[in-house]
Image (cartoon, rainbow, N blue to C red; front, side, top):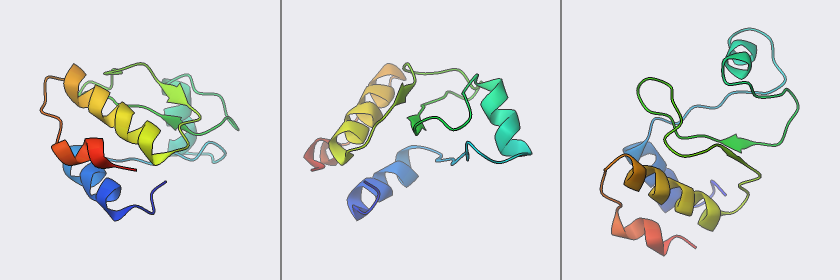
Length: 91
């Protein structure tokens, strides 16, 4: 899904992306515990505000560019931010 350069650019310009490994000790494990995420689960996409609260509900199994773009647009709308027109054109 992240092989689309337009999607990656939008992620980097509209959000602060963070990867948390679900099978590593240390800070990754601490974040899993904080957000009550099980280890060894499917990938999860979360959109958090500056306080670490979910902007929209967490979702696992977001496996397509279109699904990720839709979640991004929903998070932007929910936070009162404009949704770039090009986000709707992700395929």
